[in-house]
Length: 207
Image 1 (cartoon, rainbow, N blue to C red):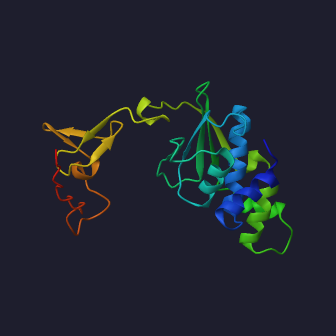
Image 2: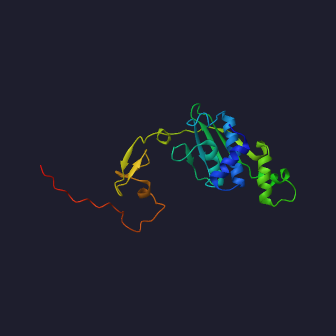
Image 3: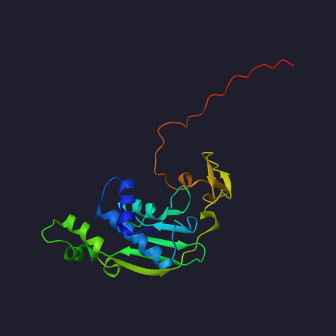
């Protein structure tokens, strides 16, 4: 695995700017990968990563690990925590790495004197030992066959809206097969009927 500065540079280029979240995400990923003994550059299909926040650090995690939603190797769990769990699918070992709240104040002691708080955090996070920056826990993660990479295993249609549902995400209620939007409350509100493509006119065929 490349060193911290090289990984940080790539993460910043992809994210668009340098920030404390990029530093945390890169270091969090390095910590988890080192604990598992996995190098994603050599074993790109071996990892699944669960991220618990939709902030800058997640971009850094995806940059370092190569995991992504499209490959089904990145899972987003909306806990609002600066944390990620790294799963080695070959051995089923997993480690959860969480940024400690106490590191916010401790960062200043590792930074040059006179910096503003945000700048001190940015500098300090790069120098602090893992033990002061993160809480590290060995964990167990059960990953359903429907959540693993690969082609969809099942596909059904919602009885109400007719839209297709992949990989067991349907809900069966009182005999109806429903998508989660129809079964519960969708995050969106329909303001018009679904658009459909026009049916092309029939063309007579001379036999």
